Image 1: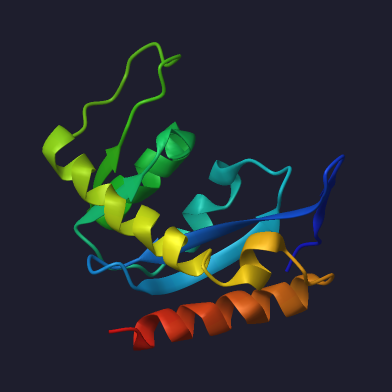
Image 2 (image 1 turned 90 degrees about the vertical axis):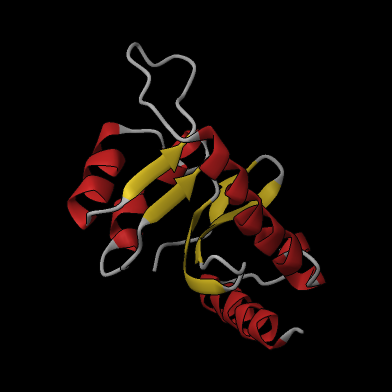
Length: 139
């Protein structure tokens, strides 16, 4: 587990999350806030069995797309506008990405996650895990 990120605004951490089609959390990883999203995406995808992998523009990189293709899945990732040869994606399927955005909205309802009260990565990771479990129990 990595350390907590520091910025001028204080402590920061990014939550990288895998969710299912129903908007339930499956797995997560925490990284320091100053680290780019795409650096740990491939390690998070190891062992995942799926047909489609959704992501935003931050995950539009060749290593990530190659890892998704090696899994036998289709990458539904909006291409970054600065890319010389943008990859094709299914616009209709990309609309389903709202499920993961809604999942983050559910997790951010827990005040300690949204405001980052915990001072250690271990405690913050435990709070994210508890929030994920409670999200599964929601009706």
